[in-house]
Amino acid sequence: MKEQRSRREFLGASAALVIALASEARAQGGRPRPTPACGEYGVTHPQTEGPYFKPSSPMRASLIEPGIGGTRIIVEGTVLTTDCKPVPRAILDFWQADSQGEYDNTGFRLRGHQLTDDAGRYRLESVVPGNYPGRTRHIHVNVQAPGQSVLTTQLYFPGEPGNQRDGIFDPDLVMKVRDGDGGKLATFVFVLDPAQGRRR
Ligand code: FE
Image (cartoon, rainbow, N blue to C red; front, top):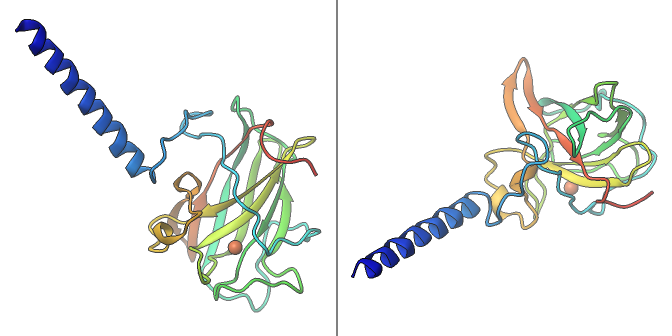
């Protein structure tokens, strides 16, 4: 009897654990979160490059130029190794749709690359991209530490109705976004795993 009760208690505890893990996985988009590599930040997941990448973007941290409308956004953060060291002189090559959801495929509007500083920091000035059919709001980026492979990924916005409808949306790639003076202020920390990505 005693044995039966303790077995029931054990089973009850196991079931509670399974339910807790399942609800955590649901809260994170159906997939258990990997162990963070760096404080709260896990290794940054790769994503498809999509059809609109163009090589040889201009070197510039600000993509703002005359005629670009939409809500201004600053995205800033750090590039780290998996052991949490900043990566100076990492290349970040950003490209995105304009506020109407259009890419410039003939020129280089809303495309630009920059290097992290000595503390591994980057700072992008841009506009909030629009949605386009089939995709939720996102910014594309290729990140490459010196001598390492390229991480191709995308950054997402929190609380977007389109996030749950976008088949490749990844909750681990959502930026922290808040309202700032005259626009949005976003942050994202990249953690690069040298074993991941592809050589260029
Ligand atoms: Fe895109």
